[in-house]
Length: 298
View 1 (cartoon, rainbow, N blue to C red):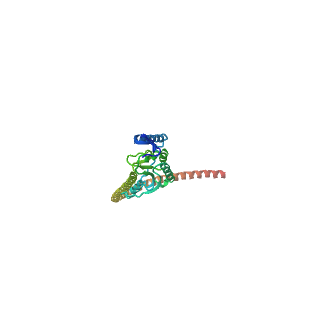
View 2 (view 1 turned 90 degrees about the vertical axis):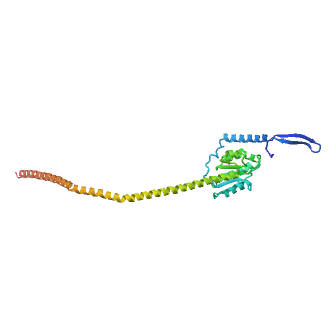
């Protein structure tokens, strides 16, 4: 369908009517020319994003294991938005998701500015959400050209949250798909990706829970075995210790008289030595004092 801003190649013929004047009758159109121009614009935008080093920025953000708080950018009342919400609500795993719609025009010249405003509002409250979803149902190729916009792509690339794009249907690819963290084909596919991510997290938790239970059970069983083993060896070990201590005690009792006798003999020898020294010292003192008294008497 023709729209403002499109470049077209037409096959037409001029006609002059006396009643209506000059007119041009279009007999054919070359869609390849128009699609080629769209591809050129898309290629130039992607080259600019790559040159500025921002094309992979959103893809490098860590994606939460269980994204349940979802900021949705879509047109209010759009079929694609309804399909997305219904898919989340009816998931077979019983997972609960919290979605908040940031309404934007998803067709025409207002698409880029309204989606950019929605992205800015979400990023101002990014702590309230896990990721951003930009979705739009199927439409003509020309309807989706609004998403081949540099400013819009740059805002997605610089978003504080990972962005999932589900725009159009299977064959459609826009510039946003090249810069988003997770590009999928449709709004329903976006919902399925989120459900699958949370289901994997749920399965991992179940596996961790099972592993913990098995590990605890194994430890309890091993500790019970250790306890039974210790209960069986403690009496024998106690008797063995008791026997060893009795042997040591008897050995000490047999050694005490010999050791005590040796020490007594040694101390008696010391006493005899000290007694002899005392006697000798006393005689020397007596002789010295006797001579002193004799000298004093003389």
